[in-house]
Amino acid sequence: MIIPGSLYAHDASAKTITLSAPWNTTTMEQILSIRDLTTGKIIYNCKNTNTGHPTISMTGAVITYTYNLSTLANGDKLQIDVSVGFDGGTAY
Image 1 (cartoon, rainbow, N blue to C red):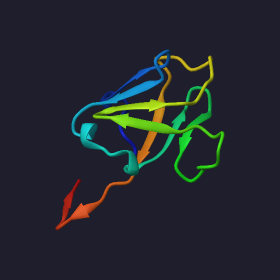
Image 2: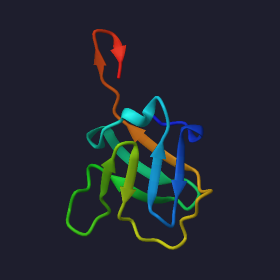
Image 3: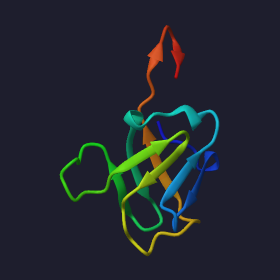
Image 4: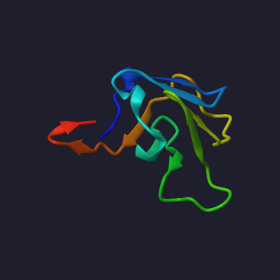
């Protein structure tokens, strides 16, 4: 599932993405990929865990990424793909 652009705030200089409700309870394990659609760059991909590739960490609803590219900007449109599970028919 893709998190809508209206439900996150991107701070490129701090390398953070803050998720808003209802996505503010997302865990790091649920994040599949983060792509900057404006630049076409992949900020994070959970399938690529080799040393030297961008990583993320999370504190609460704030994602911090290691991707180092000066062309990223706060206004860039991001595509944040998350895995959504189900428990008894309720999405979480």
